[in-house]
Amino acid sequence: MLLFDFVTIRKESIIMRHLMSPLDFTVEELDQLFDLANDIENNMPKYAKMCEGKKLATCFYEPSTRTRLSFEAAMLNLGGSVIGFSDAASSSASKGESVSDTIRVISCFADICAMRHHKEGAPMVAAEKSSIPVINAGDGGHQHPTQTLTDLLTIRSLKGSLGNFTIGLCGDLKFGRTVHSLINALVRYPNVHFIFISPQELRVPDYITEMLREKNISYEEVIRLEEIMPRLDFLYMTRVQRERFFNEEDYVRLKDFYILNKEKMALAKQDMLVLHPLPRVNEISVEVDDDPRAAYFKQVQYGVYVRMALILTLLEYAKPTTPQE
Ligand code: CP
Image 1 (cartoon, rainbow, N blue to C red):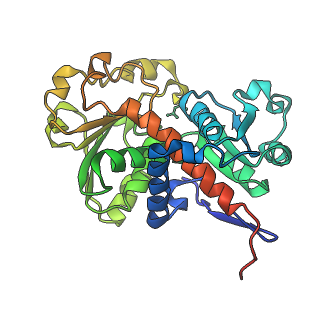
Image 2 (cartoon, rainbow, N blue to C red):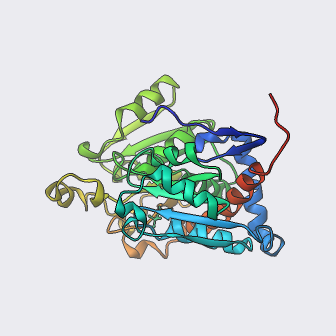
């Protein structure tokens, strides 16, 4: 776990905010962000020119479909434009350029940057040298804050509130940065009960269970998905991440440990919702996609609205203001 999540960097008269962790926003600020995202959802044309003349840089050192393209769609929906790279090999990182130097260069070209990196903390290093807002679009196995904002907005929009539910998180809870980010965010809401469903090898890290115990938040750890299905309000499925395994043998042994299918869905409540950050491999059978409780493609759409709201919010903070001490 990184010890230095931060929110604000003061530069001359600009109070600029970055997003490194979902905890960088207070619960009240998140409510405002989600209200804005829902207004965007319902009044898209109102926002069509709000970022005219602004540029988003997407600096992706790791593969992505949803996060990069939804950031780009978000900026285009706001009337702005997009530059960037989708592969470290096509950037000067391949010649040895540091993240610190790259962000200084990008700061000359763009107004805001979304960065994904395989190294934990790399977007934070960039933020420290940046003169534009930096958004962590996923750093190694650490955090994926905009996926968490997407997950929270999806839950709030589809269930009406954040809190008073039981959520099962299933699959790769060891390496899954989306899971780590989501747990950190949900502990701030009332009466959320966590059930962690994983094989022993992919258990949620100890620092997370220690944090839950310290905060007196209830959780269980189980191996079998079937036994807890009837109790869940949300099931958050995750992919076993091949790219984070040290050896292929372990990956092959664990990759199909959980497969959500119609039989397992039959055990669940009628209003339970299935979420997944995607991409999926085998962990949700395609036969589940037609079940009205499958919310993972709606979740992708909410990702665009919340990224639009985030871009607007961070650009607003980056405007020059009177310094306050
Ligand atoms: N959910 C998610 O981060 O997907 P991508 O890796 O495709 O961006």
